[in-house]
Amino acid sequence: MNFNFYKKQKSAHQLCFWGFWLVALFLFTGCTKWDTLKSPNKGNIYMAQAYSNRSELKLFKIDDSQTFTFGVPMAGFNGAPSNTSVEFEVDNSLLSQFNKGHAYLNYNFQPLPKDAFKISDLSTTIEEGKQDSKPLSFSIQANKLDPTVDYCLPIKIKSVSNGSIDSALSISYFMIDSLYIRSRDITGQGKLSVSNDNNDGANAKEGSIRVTDNDYTTKFLYEFVSDSWMQLKFDSAYKLNAYTLTSGNDAPERDPKNWEIQGSNDGNNWTTLDERTDYAFTSRRQTSTFEFNEPDGKSYLYYRFLVHQTNGSHLFQLTEWRLLQYY
Image (cartoon, rainbow, N blue to C red; front, top):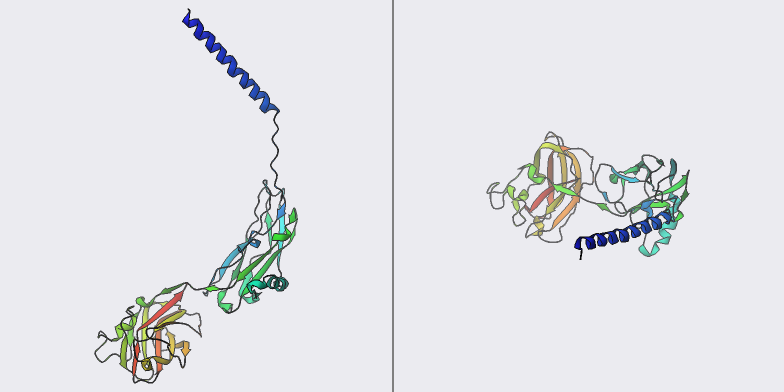
């Protein structure tokens, strides 16, 4: 038997086999027509922040304005067929129905005060071939808001030059139901001095250094004199927002009752930033936070805790005094 002849015959059969299938595949694919992909919502223009809770704003309780963005996309795979202009408007008349529709959640949103926000623009464009509009923005000043009130800024699509407005997602209710506090403790950056110290000196077991040592098992104790004070001097001026006081471990009559927090840039001329009267701690080693009730938004080199009166004792005590800055 001629072995080489058999191998050649086998190779020829294989070539014929695969050639047949290649031709068949070519004929099959050549006759197949692929459908063009289409979006069922093609041309719809909507606000993404109108969906679910995407319009809930996280606003921090700081003096600086905070900026948020909004805009619209156009549904579809190929983007806008031509430059498409989009107009928005703020419509506070929508809030009544919005609150009513969410009565089960106890919604009671009020219009955002006009002097508390600023919108960059109410007109934008979706450029040809693109799906998203150029972003717009609005800024809010949290220091002009009442923290006990829930606010809302309803922004809706007013008109579009191409496509159609998705009525179900045409309004974004930008909600503010909380003001978040983000703070840093800068007490350790200041140098402490006091008008009256412990009889055994500043470094004693109950000396003045204990009031800012960040150790809540120690305290500062001295023979009280009306309008005695403790102060912190910083290397550079700081704008602060709040402070904490921690009561002593015993004898509530030694706690401060009436006091002021003051700021100064020369150590002589003082501005009152907070004043408390008839205050009483409810427990021992209790830390209470106090925000300035007369903030002027200025930065100071010195901060002073001026104590007018204790709760009846001839002794004064305090576990900690800390200064806080919101950012």
